[in-house]
Image 1 (tube, rainbow, N blue to C red):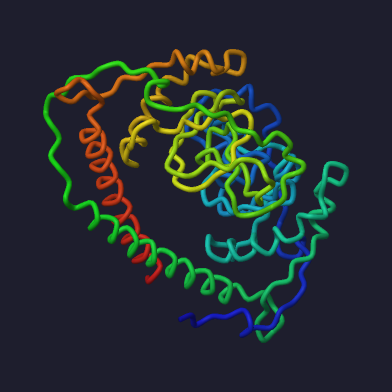
Image 2 (image 1 turned 180 degrees about the vertical axis):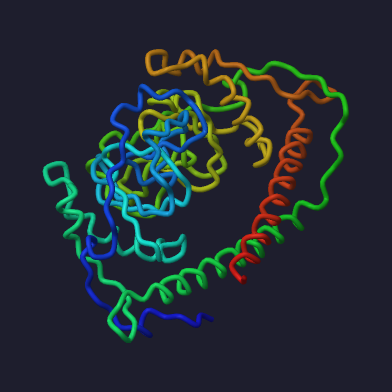
Length: 358
């Protein structure tokens, strides 16, 4: 399947300082920056390090095509990410530059670099001195030099396979959605209480320190990743079957967000399961999740979505001829959106795969 294998090359040890020129990022007070379109990179390994987008300030810009080393931050210290684009970085970020670096060999290097992160913690920071002395075991060529070509081609092959598999999946999904009904041009809408549509059941995972790693998604009051905080093993507390909605009761930035959950999950105490009282298809549940989430602005950390407010919460839904929720309309409305998104994804995958072959 693959031409390049890890066993095909010799390996050598390199200090970070011998591979990269190290620079410091310059932003110490992100609160002073207004919203804009320049990525702000901070102490997180999620979203490729991007914590938000800020207004461009030439004095703070760090040029792209570099590896950003996260040197502080609870849970993220020790991670490394590749940045193709220019960005503004927190002073907790150091960057490494090498003229041979590109988005493919950089992915190889960051994967290796991340294996050393366990030695860092709150009491042992990844300062510049420690960073420069990190040892990375990497492929070498016949002259004992870093084998940039191998690392690039190794990652390219696997990225191409991954994207080809994704293309096959989305083509099959598109075929499954081909029999899509035309939506009515005019539709009547009505108001419904959440308590009339769902049974509410609060989550029960209240001691994260005792949760052991496993394969069950633990849903918390997050504003990203469909609410998934981590994956745990069965600890005897109730698990919730899939095909339900979860609703964030509070949380910093996540309160009021509803997610569709397809599989069995565990819930922490800041999240409520919305279990349908009647049979509702997946697409209609996705429609309802957006109808709930669109109202999230009225809630905050100081004004949480407690039980009484959930019971009083109302949403606007399309009506059928009998003034009941029009499940068929909701289903095909969401399917049409899914088709459009898949068609865009397939075009992107085609362009990306072609670029790999050049």
